[in-house]
Length: 238
Image (tube, rainbow, N blue to C red):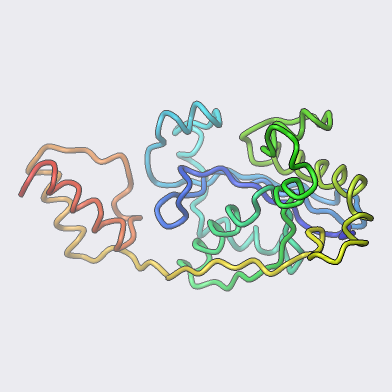
């Protein structure tokens, strides 16, 4: 059983790492099965949150306004993570957002991980659900849902419960052991900042049609700016 690892959880503006942004990060660092550090931060996505995200997480625009940008957060985060194994419930989701952010800011980020969701799907297939909240209820784990540090804490306790129940069984099986760390794979291309001409076109469209966009235009990538221009042209015309 892996006893030293870092459990990480993110809250985001949506489910697509190529379009959505991180808004909160929670980390629980474990050594010899003991908590040695906890860390959390908001992250400014430079866009207005959808109402459904605020309702789900309780995070609002005012809380994020003074938060650091992802490029400010990554060095501290990666120092905490080190080269440790990552743990998460659906860890590839969190990893994909971090990998995208790292690549966009010319940083390397390759890790191995353990996924409590995969473990639960293999050994708790008869349960109604394998969602983190449901499993926490099943095992009597205290859980502050849809907040990054709360989810990370709960995932650590879930991993310990699953290990107690199924690790020896997994060791005896010939099938791949889901408790063993595996390389996390997510392919992503770097997004470059929007061009001067894109920026000028966006401001012209906004001025012409008297629009206010719920995002920081200066923080848009080239692909994001292209999508916004296409959307405005389709709705308002030139």
